[in-house]
Amino acid sequence: MGEEAIWRTSTAHGEIYTGAIFLQQMLEWNIYLCVSIILGVTAVYTTVGGLASVIYTDTLQAVVLIIGATILFFLSIIEVGGYDAMETKFMNAMSNETRYNRSHYSCGVPPTDSLHMYRDAVTGDIPWPGAILGLSTLGLYTWDQDQIIVQRTLSARNMVHAKAGTLLGAVLKLTGFLLFVIPGMISRILYTEEVACSDPDKCMAFCNNKSGCTNIAYPLMVLRLLPKGLRGLMLAALLAALMSSLTSILNSASSIMTLDIWHQFRKKASQSELMIVGRVTVLVLIALSILWLPILQQTQGGRFWFYMQSVKSYLIPPLCMMFLLGLFWNRTTEQGVFWGLMLSTIVGVVRMTLDFTFLAPPCGSNEVDTRPEIISKVDFLHFAIILALISTIVMVVISLFTQPRPEKKLHRLTWWTRNDEAEPELTDNEDEEVHTSFIKRGEDPKTMQIQENDQTNGNEKTGFERLKTSFKNWVCGIDEDAKQTLTAQELQELRRRMTSLEESSKMKIILNVSAIFITILTIVLLVYFA
Image (cartoon, rainbow, N blue to C red; front, side, top):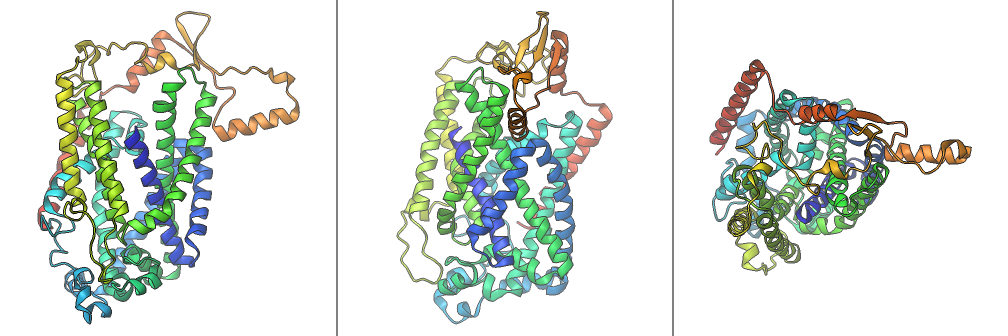
């Protein structure tokens, strides 16, 4: 949970910083004022709305964003003279400061392998071993374990909807190259002096960052290339998408806190208490994100994407290995996973601390690189591979020396037992339903009643007290009248539907064929741009 908490905080302040860059470029306001506006809007509909509002706004904003980004893609390609012209011009896109100062060549000139996805294993900024193994580990976590994705998948109506939504996400992910990467490259061609600046003082004047201004590449395209009407539409879509991602992060962090952490300390917490804890978690995470912004500005080095992936590389690989071992190896034990996560978390946090303490010298500063070789020589993607190996070895070794879980407790919990008809046999401290205090036995011992205890008689409350209670319930998402009585059979049927893997043979064929097609298309693109 420690790794997950650090990663949630990192992603939250990352989304805040990205949105602040857009507002700062558009309105030329102070970055903290931009942050305040973003947080104000986001906190309101995250705190009040919950998961439902986040999913609905996500859907609407995604449509607007795709339309705006598609228009910008075609306008940028036309402006630069076509894709082939873009490739030629990009390799020569360097600022005047770089052209006349050879000391800036190392960071001001596009690398010779810029147009290739897999780059030199030692000198490349995305070394090919790290791209194949390191990034694959991070990607596996994102799509299989990240609370944001998992929460949406589990909220699907059935297995068919969950699979179809996942495939749609895969298609949209592939469009990112055309809709965002290509316009970003064209931005360097059209606005070379700013985006490709290499002098620390000039970069500071352009974007308030001595390390470089690549972060403003896409905002500049939106602000300068699009006509006024489309510009407003695109800026609204981008900010909406960023705030949507932030709401997803806050919502998932709230779920983790209430269901996985708070529940361990308060076994019989009421629904009201859990809702309040969730809201407070959102506020605390926002506060931590704001406090982290100055550190982020100093450490991300003008390349925000690399900063986010590096933080991910220091925290996520052990979680990915835990998931794979738990899914495919029945011998995995709780003790093995626990100590594997503990050791790898310490190793990852130490590397991350060193990374934030010893910063690379800014481009063109002529400063000596004093970073330890473990930082300067070992790329963060290579470190992700090392951390994954360390955590896997520790988990496997300790699991082999500890007591395995009985087979009767593994039904429907692993890949090999997913189709078992029997339910896993859980003890009281393992079954979440046993400790849910707001699910109570009715008068009939075969029924379960979902309700809230209220110590105050509603008729005895004054008008002000009723108003205050109603406002509190509205903010915390509590429905005073929500009561539901279920028989034991109904409860069992509800659980069966929620965990069902059933799907029609027709839809199964369609979804599997679609998945194969998307996989082949992805492989073709990887080979073509390798």
